[in-house]
Image: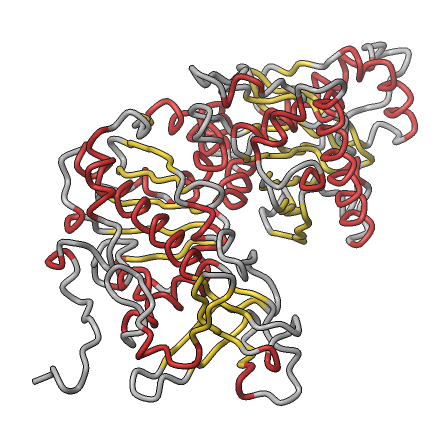
Length: 536
C-alpha cells in the first residue's frame, strides 16, 4: 500500500534522510550499499538505482558529511533514482524549476519541492527573437551551418543566467535544484533539446519526437544539479505542443463531467474541447492580430500599452487605459501610451462598432468618425491617440487594413470554435465553461470579444481567465506523480482535428467575417448602433 501511495499520489522528486552508521571493523558494508540500504529502509523497500556517474564521488561526500546526509531521488521507469546527496540538517530543502518555454517570452518559477510553495518567478525575452520573431524563421535558420546549435546555445545561455540570478537572489546553491519541468510548443521544445525541427513545417509535418519524458539536466547543459530530471511536456503533433497539454492539465477540465473549451491565443489560436471522458483539439492561424501583432500600433502586452478602450456613443470621446491602470487622457504628467495589445484592439473594435464608427463590414463610417479619420498614403486611418498625447511622439492610428486583419482573425477564431463543436455534435450554447489562457486571456474583456463575434454569445460567467496555464501545468506536474502521469494520459486522449483540409471551416469562415456575424441570431446580446433618428 505504501508503494502505491508514493508512486501515484505523492511527489516524484523527494528527499529522505536515511539513518546511516559510519563503517567499522564490525560493519564493513560498502558505502554505496550502506546508502541504498538506508534509503530503502526509509522509503519502505522501494527499488533504488544509482548511476555510475554518482558513485565516483559518493565515498568522499559520505565521509565529508559524517554519514549524516539527505538523499534526493526521483521516480521514473518503475524505480527510484538517486539524484545527489547533501549534508543533512536544518534548512536543507530541495528545489524545482517550472519553465514556460515561449517563442517570445520565457517564464521561470522557482518552487520549494518540500512544501510546494512558489519561492520566486521571473520572465525574460526569448533571445532567439534576434534570429527571427516567428517560428518559421528559426526553423529555416536551424538548417544553416551550426544554426541549430546556435539557437540552442542562445536559449540555454539566457536560461542559465536567469537560473543563476534567481538562485543568488534567494541565497540558494543551484545544486539544490533537483528537478525541472518544461512546457513549450513543438518547435520550441525541439530547439531546447537540440533536435532538428526541419520536418515540423513540411508536409507531412512530422516532428522528431512527441513524447520524450525525462532527460538529465547535465545532458542538456542546464546549470542546476546535473542529476536532476528534466520533465518535457509531451506534444500532440507539429502544431499542438506540450504547452497546450500542460494547459489542459492546469485547467482541470479533464477532471470534470461538464464540457468545456480551453483557448490559448499566441502565434496561433489553439483550441481544446472536452471533459473527463474525451478531448478534441485543433489549431489555426488566428493569433497574430488578436495579440496586437498585425496592427501598425500593435504590441505585446506590457507597461504603457493600451489594454482598454471605452467610447462614449453620444460624445464619441475616447477613454483609454494602458496596462498598470494609467488613464492617460486624465493625467497631465503621464508619458502617454506607446501602442495597443490584442485585448485593447478587440475593445477598440467593439467600441467603434457600438458607437457606429465602423459598420458591420468593419468599414469606417466617415460621418461618425469625423476629423479623427485621415487619409494616409491612400489608406484611411483613425486617430486613436493624437501625437501630443502619445508616448511615441507620433499619433497612434488604426488603419482600415489593420481592422480588416483583426476581422479575419476574429472570424478564424469563431470558425475554429464552431467547426470543432460541430465535429463533436455539440452546439456552442451547450458549453458550460470557456477557459481563456495566456496573457491574452488575462486582459481580454469577454463582452468586447462577443461584440465583434470572436467568441460565442454565452453568459459572461461562462468565461474564466486562467493566466499562464503552460507555466501552471508545468509546475503542477513537477510536484505530484499522478499529475506528471496525467500529462501523458492527456496527450494520449487527444484527437487532433486538421483544419487545413476541412471544407466546413472554409464555408463557415466567410460567414464570420462580419460584425458580429452574418447570422445575427447567434449574437442576441449585441446591439448595433442606430442613429437617434432611426430609433424608436
